[in-house]
View: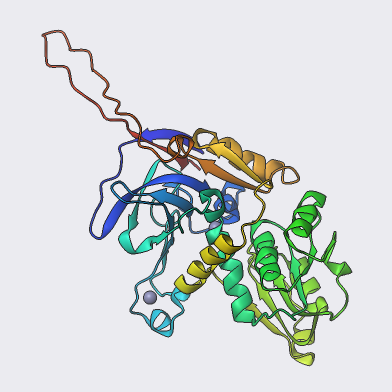
Length: 347
Ligand SMILES: [Zn+2]
Ligand SMILES: [Zn+2]
């Protein structure tokens, strides 16, 4: 990762240049940093979770980061998260770990007046959980288990607790179990194999490893559903015999629809979670933040990168015209506007 200065992007087509205030580092941003393979091709500005402002407009916006065609069968079915021509900011186009980012006009979702942008920046990870729980049919009386208490698992706990279902969670890190309990989990275990056998109607796997798939199948009741959101391991063994004999649904789920995303923002506005489990760091500390999440997961659960603009309370920089010293020969002094700074993947 490196921190560089680049010219501010120019808007093209139905796009606007948005000024980034807060940007969350997602587990998926870390995937290739950890050495895994995946669709992110460097050099690339990473990041898809952001609260932004747009010059000349009131208020703030959350960026809906999926780019969907609106025309393919999946989009027509209302499953735009499965769009055949799906794109994602920070994956196949420049992301939000920068002072400014080009986004489609339609990607801007207004943050309700008075809402803390540090809460609104959790919309994207919460939307993934809201979507998964909707698909799995969770209600207030659902017996829910969540395996893995990274940001997605924790947001699943928050969404479930808001709906009245208080899950049992499992995570090896005591610090994350403690956060889960504060967000509304009824019980927190260190190992998913401790979940009571066939005791859950729905199990959310927010870890995404073979051990979690097996534990989830053991913990779900016959006829229940396991939703896999985590993607730490792409292939492995699943106990298919149990799936068949006990009529278990095992399904993967990717991202969220626009409706899920807006529902997540409303949920956060109505029920803001505590923020003390988040780490806030300046954009210039982006690379160091990646290192800390990967190497000190017991200390750092999620980092939100903060731009200078957020630090100034969403005010534009006071005009900064640098006078370039005239070259010998006495040419006119020129101006340079403040360039845009970015955190760029350099792997
Ligand atoms: Zn994310
Ligand atoms: Zn489509």
